[in-house]
Image (cartoon, rainbow, N blue to C red; front, side, top):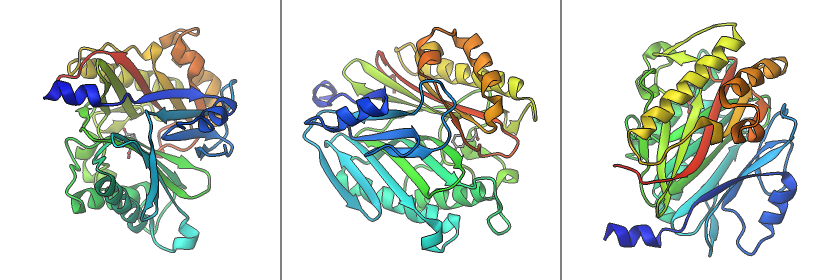
Length: 341
Ligand code: 3EB
């Protein structure tokens, strides 16, 4: 029974493309489900606006599967799916909406859960959250903390796991533009992975805000027969629940890499696939553009300057969800193997 289902699962693929390659892929008979662009506006992609600090310039992570595809809109979410895998996106302009970020994030997530129900792709795998002014005050509460409140309430409203079993995610600060959420969902639940060096984010104490962030450190996703994706959430210089190495970007980058390695080791307990940071595709979010060369030197010392990870990494100027964090790295990759539930 399970074997039959797995064989009927169309493969989920991801490719890091130049804007030109993305444009060609978008014109193919079966276009990607969606694309996350990094840099300037890229036609047809959901672009994370920010200065690209890596030499190869703007890139698009294109998430694809087999056709035929169906596309539509649920509430304010635009989505495209093939009955097994779904990519969706929502943008809300706070100036137009005139509501606080807690209310807006609850609304955005309610539309996301509505999409899952409508399409039958009912399991979130990965979320990407982009918040303008993430560290700014939102009327007595930092805006990231407002976002966390609305997000957790929406998970609880919809009857989705807001603690153990939450999807992988990132929450990044942009220097302008709308509040954006992008997501990948599927017909089967991912296997969540935590980092033994860190308190689970959904168990952070209330000193970090009235409601904890809703995400797991990583998700293992069976993407095809014999293939597993590892989707690692935004990872920063946090040990336990505390930010460490305040003001020391070199030490923060090394601690972040130690955390990534710990998440990969924890993922290996749950699957037969073997992942190597040096072969994952990473996004490196850099708070201060002038820190990029040092961050890159530490990252390349860890993975090798000629490694696929070093060559494909996108460095983007962005804000991080805690004011004392200077760098955050997220990563994904697909390897041969099976997930152990
Ligand atoms: C952290 O570990 C750093 O709120 O969705 C990383 C990944 C972070 C996801 C989120 C926040 C989120 O707490 C910040």
